[in-house]
Image 1 (tube, rainbow, N blue to C red):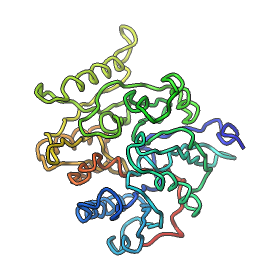
Image 2 (cartoon, one colour):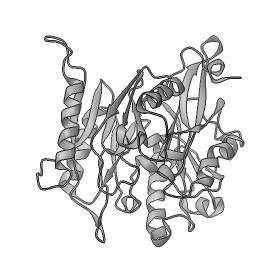
Image 3 (cartoon, one colour):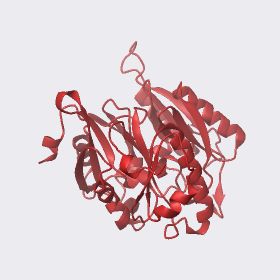
Length: 363
């Protein structure tokens, strides 16, 4: 059966704030790059698992499942399922399924799990186990829907954002970076995105790469979609910060997108700026701390914070204004950014009706 036959007419890429069935974590272990501070990152993952499981089920892919189970709370409001699975590293956003939803026979919901190629952000890091993780999980009967093999196309979940209404946002610096999908041109990559993800429009952003980001500029570090045609984006007013000019160019590009198409027309987008955290270093290396890398779950938004009380509070307030009615949960992410990512990078959400964790639930 080809992909066109698999895809019902109403197949689409949902927004992250739509109802979810579960969130996935891929757990750190001693063979990952977290080894030098494994205790610290494990405590962060335990805290994140506890928060997520207050709001929805949690799927954990773990190389050492028995050890992970011992770390988790005995009882949580929603179930946690720990499933054995080998992994090179823990960036679930980039190696996990990207999921489409559709209406099946007689209007019943269905899910399509797109397994894209993951090659360590352009062959920078080992990725063979991570690239096989989706097929391993799917074989265990967790995912309820259609598996689709897209391994011939490199695409990381952190490199795309959607409003759930047919528009996809991405960055040219990432999708056109070396060792992704060469020799495809930008128009050819755009056509692949439209066909594979069932979106009608691709918006390319050309600025905003954070120092220390080894993904070549994932959009989820700088610009995020929110309801009511809203975009949150990172901004700094500090002209001494080396990000200033690049983020100013990003702001201007977004303002062009939000400008009315003609005099008297309504604005296309509502823009909400997020502050840039004060510089955080690991030795001499500046780390890519960002408030844009938040995770949306059912009823809440989990926001990365960095021990900068005023800026942390401001970011939480702004994100809360974009997601009214949801709890805003700050989570210390200073250990996560030591490996150049944050909360959104280590998680992947799945839309409602997509997963059944019952056979694997541990609490």
